[in-house]
Image (tube, rainbow, N blue to C red; front, side):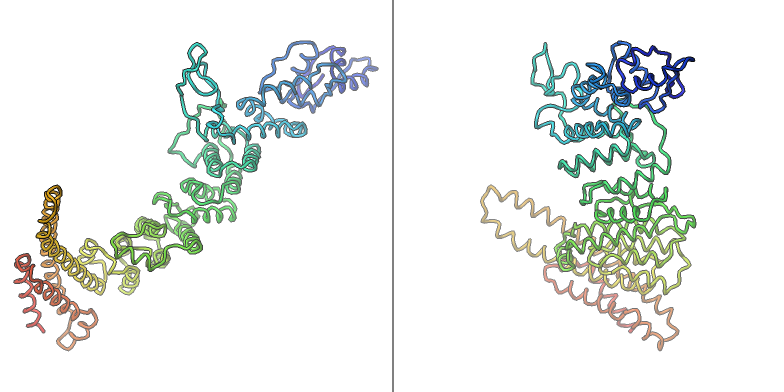
Length: 597
């Protein structure tokens, strides 16, 4: 008997008594005088499976296992070892072992399904693949907590219910809590076609999408070497021999299959995984359809991403920019389109929340903060074109940013990295931000920023003093209300009088500290106002040239603003003592401005 490259010297009568195919082949060769040589090139499982079949024919007791039963079952079917030939033949014995041992065990079903890849056409014809997959799907979809029977193999001191045993009696103590991800690592050992069929059967049985996404995530991390190198995945499940890394073509095919299998529901699949798949797909040059789908998936849940996720390197041969800004722009457009379809936050609602002092934490606000951080990261790239930077910054609507501090930081970094920009380009870039939406800290920095155009600096100073005036008026109003509410507190019960008085004292101290800092800031702003006026006067060629420049930079409005602020503060009757140090300086500045005019 020649099976592949191995020859077996056997007696014909044990073989005739068990195999219908061998009986037919030996009958055809019996007339030859030189001996009977039969070639069997197509035996499923090869020489190892035929060796087990030959031992069975000689009456040797077989040791069937989950690793060899599929080979033996397929070989027995090929050799026609049916009950018509002999009672208790090999087909019947392997079927009994499959049904009563292998398919009742999760671990054995996994091993048997792994071996089906080697004899796939025969295993499909005998429905072994379908039976194993159905068995695994039923066990994976069954909630272990519902039956109190975890699916994993149990230790010698643990009952099927999971409790610790003492002399065979359950103590009721639980060793571990079962969870829905107990089978992720085991099924990750399956080949992609088997795994895909298993997931499809699970979905048809109504398994939750987040469980499917979790399994797909684990499978991707196990099969794609560059997907998640920072995290190590434990291998405490079924023992597997280390395999070589899949080829680039296999990895590309895997990514395209994962894109088809991943659920479309927002938030079910990790955003970090989607970004990892997108990076790997770009490196492997996956199909444009796959890349577009991954970008669309990420756009649906961009508000769940981190800044590190957005930093996708540019893998193009031209190396125009360090990071792939165009990809992030497309993802942002997908997010904005989805946000508009789902009825995102309206501009009026965002403005109302901003006025109430609680910036909106809606997805579009989170994405705006994320994009501003991304712009700050890519701004130092000298190859990043101004139009590309502007288009990404301007893609977000105005109401998406409660404050423009992050955008100002990104613009400042870009101006520093691109000193060759003309004055008109600088002004065009600075139009992206709204000076009225800058915080006091950002205004302070911008007022001293030499990289900003002079027009922008003047606007920043104007709105800064406007914010400062509003803050002073608000603090004085709160202080007056607090002073007026103290006499009313005398009629309160004794139980709450001490606590209310102590709270009022603390608030008063906080207000005093705030007023002191505001006095200092007003003084600094007036000095900056004077220095700015002197600089503008130097730029003017004469008194005739002063009026156009004055109108251009809005300095008359600035002077009126300073005088209005001074008048507003001096009109407050209860704030005379609190701003007594500020008034002489303000009066002196007012006289100086009047003399100059």
